Length: 551
Image 1: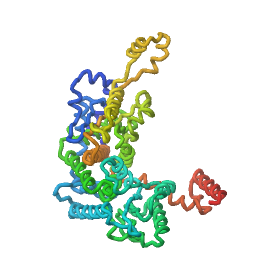
Image 2: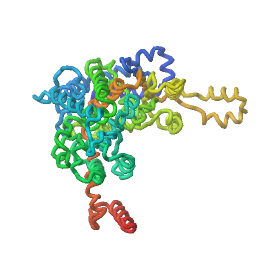
Image 3: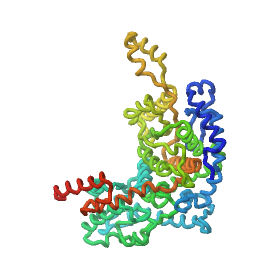
C-alpha cells in the first residue's frame, strides 16, 4: 500500500501550497470577480460558499485529482455496499442504511438488513405513539411526562444536539432531559424536580457496560425503587438501546422494551438508529423520519454527484488543503443560529474521534498532519470572546460559519442583525484592514500624527483568514438531516484520503481501562503501587483527604 505522499497529485499540491502561501485572498478576488460562482455549491436546502479560501481553480483541480487517486469513489461504494471498511474491528460502516428511505435493499454480506431496520422503525413508532399519547403508564397508573436519557458520547451528543436544534418543532407532550456526566451533580439536579411516577428512563449503551452510563442507570434505579417500593417498576420506567440485550435483561428491562443497536453502526454516527429515540419522543415520529429523509437526500447527493460538485467532498478537500498542506492546526465551527448551539460540540466528537489519529491503514505512522483540532461555539458569543484571536492572532484558524436564511424565531429585525454580523465576520477575516486605510481613518477622526503612530500597528488586520459559509434555508428536520450527513461524509472522505481508520476509537478505550484500575485504588490501600509516582501520589492524597472528611 503506497503512502499518499507518493501520489503525483499530493506532490503537486505540496508545491502549489508553497506558491499559494504568498498570495492574499484580496488579490484572488480582485483577479476573478466570479469566484463565488466557481467556488460555491447550491443544494435544495443549503448553500456552500467556499470562495473565501486560499484556492484557485488549479487548487481545486489538484485536490479533486487527489481524491480520485485515493480512490474516494471506490471507497464510497464499498461503504454503501456494506463492505467491512472498519478495518481494525472488521465491521461494516452502514449508518447510511439507517436512513435509506428508498425501497432499495441494502446488504451486510448475504443478509438484507433493510427489512430489519424497517422492523425496528415500526417498533420505535409504536413505542413513541404509546408514550406521547399517554397510553404508556408508570407504576402508579400515571402517564409519562418526562424522559431522562442516560448515555455518553455518541449515545448522548447527537440526540441532545438535535432535540435542542429542533426545539421549536416539539409540542412538549413530554420533556426530555439528558444525563451523561458520571459526576453525581448532574443526575441529582435532573431528578430532583421530577415525579418518579411519571419518568421514563432511556438507557443508551451499545455494550450496556459503559461505566458512566451504568453508574447513572443504577442511581436512577435506586431513585425509582425508593418511590415505588419494589424493583418491579423497572419494567414500566426503563427502556434500553443496546446491542447487549442479555445485560439489559439482567438489569430488569423487558425484552419488548429493548431497542436494537448493531455493531455496524458507530456511536458517533448512531442518532439515526434507536439511539435517536429521545428525538422521536420529543418531536414525534413524523419529524424523526423527516430528519432521516434529510440525511438520505445528502446521501444521494454524496453518492451520485461528481467529485468537483460534491458538497461533502469539497468540504473535506478544503479542510485537507488548509490543514495538511497549508499547516492550519485547528478549525472553528461557528453557528449563527441559536438552534445550533450544540453543533460545534457534536462535530468536535464526530471529526476528532474519527480522524484524530496518526497511524495509517497499514500501521505505519503518517508523516503529515491529519485532522485539525475542532472547536467553536455560537458566533455572536464568540465575537465577544475569542474572535480577537481569529482576527489578529499569530495562528490562522480556518472556520466554518453556519447560519440560516429564515430564523427559528422571527422577532422584528433580530435575524437581519444576526446575519449582518455573520457576513461581516467572514468578510473581515478575509479582507482585513491595512496600515494605509487605518492611517486615513485616524486622520479623518482628528487624531494627531503622534497618536496615529502609537495606534496604527495595533489596528492592522492582515486578513487572509479562510472561511466556509454554510447557509441553510431554515433549521428544520430536513435541513438538519442534510447538514449532519454533509459533515459525516466529509469525515469519511478525509479518512480515505489520509488513510486513517475513521471508525474505531482506541484512544478512548485506553483511558477507560486505566480508570477501572484506578477506581479500585481509590478505596484499597496498596493498589496505587502499580501506577507512576505522580498518579500514585494523587491517589494517596485523594484517599487521605476523603478519610479525613469521613467520606
